[in-house]
Image (tube, rainbow, N blue to C red):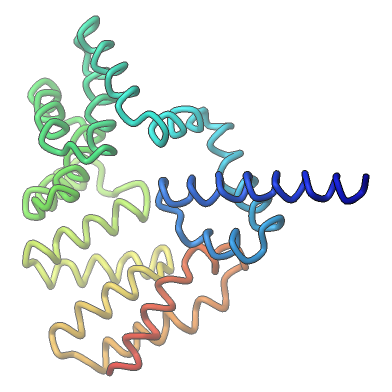
Length: 246
């Protein structure tokens, strides 16, 4: 009987492990995959507590699950809602879903139709800037990020701020990008910002300055709590690789 119990539990652990790894890959949380693979029980427990339960509490889990297993179903549902009621809310919900499924042209068209109605709505402008960034329209993206800043003086989170800095860099505004990366580092102690600024400085042949930021990313990772280290370890790892090449 104990052997039978262990055998059944083992298969259950494998199933939960597979679900967690699949979810992590599909939602861009790939740093968790290592801990889930090498410490299955603890890794799955950490992933469920830190990532899946908050999604459930926010009401996002079932939508995300639907995107993973039935990617077209949510789009069809939102398209049906828009046909029933042609509102800005329904348009923006569909535009964001198009963005998540990488249908950027459709997402941009819908978002621009909303801006025509509300030209100074920072939420709509911010969404358009993010879609344009992912579509490779870096100059247009940077311009719309700048419009958001002209309305409300700041962007609400470091993820969007990093997109703005990258849009500036990729559209050729290197000096403004450097200023934005430095601002993000001051405000958020972002290891990703340090790594990306290091790359920018390296590209400009400013090796010593680049080395300072790569080294800081490697050193600072140890100052963070363990769960933060797991989430941001890739930036320290990539910075260490760059240090070895300088």
